[in-house]
Image (spheres, rainbow, N blue to C red):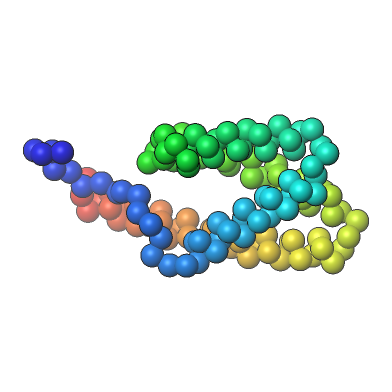
Length: 129
């Protein structure tokens, strides 16, 4: 990159343990959904495509720096698998309440985090571009 000086937002590791906890909790819920809905063919199709995406983007690291490549599929798979998890427990009020509380906490953290990152991005745009 000699002679090419630019300002850019680069991916880096998280500076706190909270995002790692968020991702771990989300993946536990996804795996829980897969285990509970193992016999459902639609869940199997979703999980196969999810595992192929993980192999391509996380293990082979193809397109890892451009999240819009794999982000669209992950954003599609997560809600569907979480929906199947809520569906399987629709007649169990205690488990459904637990899932709802965990989901609401994760959603609140996601909204706050996205707001902070968006303000950082706009600050970056105003400062350098």
